[in-house]
Amino acid sequence: MKKLKKILKWFFIAIIALVIAIVIFRNEIFLKILRMEESAKMDRPFTMLELPEISDSIYQLLMNDFENDARDPYAYVLNEFDNHDIIFLGENHRIRHDLLFMQKLIPLLYDKGIRNMGFEFALNRDSLLIKEVITNKDFFDQEKANQIIFNLSPFWGYKEYIDLFKAVWEVNKDLPDRAEKFMIFGIMHDFDFSLMEKRSDEFDEEKMLKIRKGVADGDRFMANSIISNYIKRKEKTLVYCGIHHAFTAYSSKRTGAIVTDSIDVKTMTISLHYPWGAKEGSKYRTVYPVNGYIDSFIRKHKSKEFAFGINVNQTSFGNLTDTTSWYVHDKNLKLSSLCDGYIYLNAFSMAEGVSIQDNFINGKNIKYARTQLPNPELRDGIMRFLGSKVFNQIAGLDADIKYQFRHLY
Image (cartoon, rainbow, N blue to C red; front, top):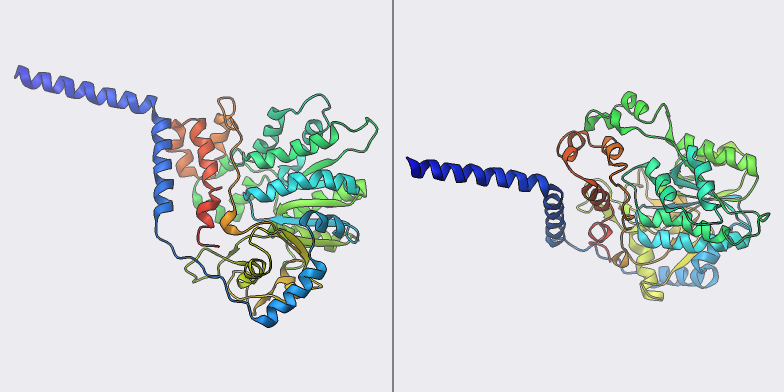
């Protein structure tokens, strides 16, 4: 009996010690599980999506227009402002080289006389805070720059987006006091995901209206932000946003189209190169744009790393046809129906995801961050017991571009 009691005693001590260890090291354990899952995910078998062969006739058409009209991507954007008032530059989200391109583009825009940028990744109500950060001549306030993105979403703490504010600050800090400054204004509305009670609420418009704090149409809100700024400043403007908001013609309900239809301005959509969502029934989640002809052409004519921008409305690139993406409805889609200009920066196989800003979610703001997790089951479950390292890591999962693009050349 004494031996049994002794065994039970040590058994309960071991259980208590295990529980204490789990409590103390819960964040490290959870992060370890996440990393193991990420590693296992990359090891899962997959099939590459092959690129098409280009016929000699199509190649010749593309090559002629490429040699005559293709430009360095920076020069391409700058040149298009000669004939446009507002340019919507659309990204797919979280692709690192897109943000690095933008950071280098900002000083060139300033030299060109373009000093106004609308930014989807900041709240419209934070435009004064943005101005404070980017016009501070003494130092770059990293904490306030982080706060701008945190106010948008605690789960968008990507360094490369925050660094856009620093790129503007670098331009402004050395300008004379009376010189015109480069300005960024936010165009996004608020969200409050603490009001989401279950995942299915995202399909309940009445619930989503409350989560969007009364904003019935997000695209119209962003369009109105751009319109009011343009009317006030009367300055040419670059709008950097998600590609689906950037459409000026493909969909009349999108931000770009609403702006185009509402005020007397010349607008255009420039699309950054990104994988298109696959048509329903495909074994792939994403496919090459316009059936892969752009990717095949640049490999054959130059190299997969050769960056360029080109106007698709006035070239054979605009006639490239897509049959495999979700953009196709009743008939096949021409590239010129989706955008006016196109920028290719790199091959999908070379793409990397953005990185998490150090200490973005931290001890000071994690309480609020928990309330904004748009997954009520996680928010009200295990995430109540986990710390900032885990929260930051979760945001990084959505930026795993290597995995998302691994089936593309």
